[in-house]
Amino acid sequence: MKVLYFGSLRDMVGVSEEDIDLPEGLSDLHSLIVWMRSRNDDFAAAFESLVFLRAAIDQEHAPFEASIIGAREIAFFPPVTGG
Amino acid sequence: MKVLYFGSLRDMVGVSEEDIDLPEGLSDLHSLIVWMRSRNDDFAAAFESLVFLRAAIDQEHAPFEASIIGAREIAFFPPVTGG
Amino acid sequence: MIRVQTDNFDISSEIATLTAGRKDIGALVTFTGLVRDLNDGDRVSTLELEHYPGMTEKELTRIEAEAHARWALRASLIIHRVGRLEPGDNIVLVITASAHREDAFKAAEFLMDYLKTRAPFWKRESDGATEKWVDARDSDDLAAKRWDD
Amino acid sequence: MIRVQTDNFDISSEIATLTAGRKDIGALVTFTGLVRDLNDGDRVSTLELEHYPGMTEKELTRIEAEAHARWALRASLIIHRVGRLEPGDNIVLVITASAHREDAFKAAEFLMDYLKTRAPFWKRESDGATEKWVDARDSDDLAAKRWDD
Image 1 (cartoon, one colour):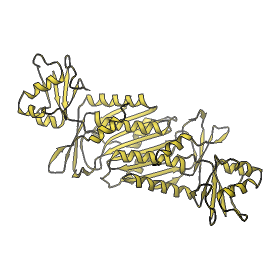
Image 2 (image 1 turned 180 degrees about the horizontal axis):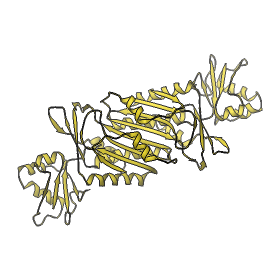
Image 3 (image 1 turned 120 degrees about the vertical axis):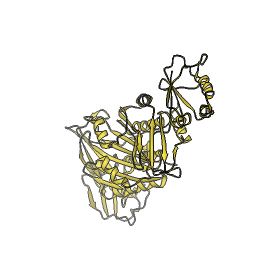
Image 4 (image 1 turned 90 degrees about the vertical axis):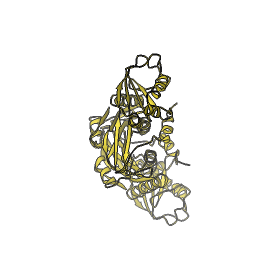
């Protein structure tokens, strides 16, 4: 699965894009976030708080309860600041 | 006193601007309107209804109760339709 | 700034003049009113705009000052055309510039609502055969009343 | 129509393209967002705009369609710039065109509120020495919530 990181979150994790073979049992964004925290200290810090975390599944905004089964592309980013 | 007429009101009275020596005793716009109605049939028709009549004293919107004493220029017109 | 003119206007040029050298503007709103070829079901081939010279300028200046008193505007412009216009032609331009978008949007709406109900302009439409004066709209009076607090 | 680009835009040219040959537009609103040299008290010398290619276009298209579903728009355009910008530079342009002004104004405000809270852009400011990501504003979330009915 392709995972993208944007903005300050990308700076924290130090990577903008990666292909991840997800471990068994991750079915929604929330479980993916918990797994992200376990990867290393940078990921633990970047995914620590949900308050300023946003996600998209296949380029659509998604709540953390959303299923990731069958998703091709998941993105994590801070609240948007365009306009 | 200079009196101006605009829009459909001017078409009805058939004059756009005139200098009028007001008769004694006219102190506010309302008494002026009543006098206007007495001038001829065209003025009577143009000034018959107050609903679609508006006025300005010295180039400022004025209610019909406004005093015309000392006014240099009075204008009558229908509701505005600019913009 | 306010202007009454027969000539057309160019929005980009007006913005450039109005905001030249400024770097404190974060939000800029323009409103352009145009002649439509159909108004309340009537075909329009020409529109004649008459105004009350002298009072028009005073009233537009007053309306603009009122907008600056109500919102944190950094610049503004009102241009209103008079004379003979055709469908597709510009009639009026309002520009408001502010630090943030809410002030610019609200001030532009206010300027248009006040201009529609207070600035001494009158429109006469022709469909090519007959002419008629355009009636004022109750909806414009209602729109203007929402600023009365 | 929506566009994401590094180049600047010219408002008059965009309006001309959008409304070419049309005579049924009575009201046209533009909103331009610009880089200010002072943001929340911090001096800004450059602004870097990053986005999520692919999702940005989809989200802007969705937001524009939503505006057309809510108001009687006859044309609309959203342009958002990305890359390196400086104070005074344009960031975003929204154009809405309708028969009457209320639809054009409301739709433009809606587009900006939704764009601010849903379109995947992120701003990084520099004062010439240090860089920092711009924080999202609670006021933008509140502004977007007013359309939730």
